[in-house]
Length: 607
Ligand code: G6P
Image (tube, rainbow, N blue to C red; front, side, top):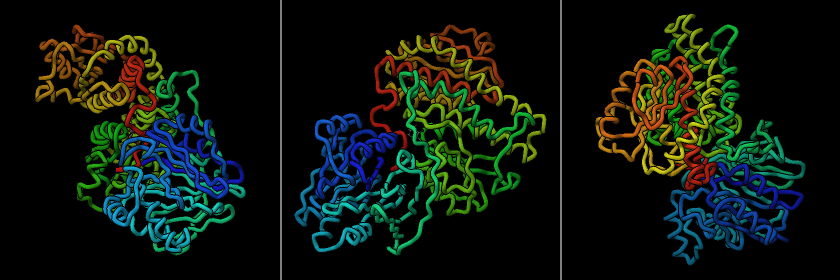
């Protein structure tokens, strides 16, 4: 995984490489490094940990040179140490890599047998060694790369910088994305257009199997067979501005508080509030012909999909088959041609989600995608894209992207229900009216922050937390547990409340808080029974409900968070706020790195 960048510039490039790498930190932040040519000679700086460590090293030992490559890493092979940080190099070539070289073990054995000495545990290091062997045998850099690429299996993107070649960068794409940026007498390579946005908005996306030779004045793209091909340049919409935290202590806090605004923008895209109807872009399929659909995603996006399963089944009578992408892609799911497959992804680059998309494409499905980054690979490969208008999400734990995904999904389900004749015009109107209230209700939910912050002080002291919910609150219980564990490192599990008695009830004692998400809806009474089972065993309950729910439950709790009253249809969107705030404040209390928690990355571009 990781983010890579390359610059063939006219000015010293180290600082610009760092700028671009900051924009790629969402792909990993275990270590970082860059290499330039100083007077034609390869020079490197690498550092363990976040980019600021590399910046400190550069301050102490600046790197000159107007050509260079850089990488920010999420460790796959080898610990996140300086020795394993990229670029990896021999005296002849330096390589920055994103992805996994799957056959590296065989290649490494072969290279060691040939007397090559390795200085890292990475899969990447085989690449500079293989290229060096070709160069030493008299090949040009282009010939060397072309030959080596044929030997590599896996999904990856690579950037190459060569000793003694101050006007040449080579990039290659197989599985992982790579974009070429066109400047004025300058050229750029980057894992995405966002990384290149400070330098240029003219971008060429390499296609699968392509490799590219860049000089300051030319671009030559070769396809997988080595043939020269033309690839169009497009104007990227990626913004040159790096978002800042505003008045917030963390991006995550800022993003939680942006939710009223960004869900409003997203809903405005899919709803005609004046006509009280859903309004979708032109679709390449007819809802009337869709009886089953597949939803695939990872992490928080998967939980958004799980909520949507309830909505599509109830509102549109479409049977939904949902799976995490890492399972779906290898499940060999039978799919009838002409079916609908929906992919949900904030980044639009998640490797497993993309692979699942390609599987569905091969099996004749209509491909729809809900993405936040509209320049992403998933967006480009989908037949129809439903953007979420969340804006850049920087905190690794997804918050505003989740509520925007839910807003788009519910709008879609309503449109499908209406188109399929399941919902009447009056029912559509009621659903749209409910959706229109989401931004205001989010503002009201955010007012509960002081109470949730107080509660988080107690949660921060415990070792385990159980989250329970039924119906659309069940995925929210899963999301609540994920949020808490990923940023506070407290062990948490989400369960369908009805499953409590099939195992997790054995865990209940006075030390483990049980967060019950239970708006006063059609399954509320059932949730109350489950809470009573917890209370009877001395469990401490945190109840998240509304005024009617609090009154009806009339239970002694560790805390009761009383949410505004709302139609149960939209509750999963609004109830996301207290679970996000609880995790956020617990993490702040504990003092973890909220925006960049250990071991994680914002966008997982390896499987
Ligand atoms: C990572 C992130 C999660 C995110 C998941 C899916 O694990 O840390 O926050 O939900 O990837 O990412 P995507 O970009 O596909 O939504």
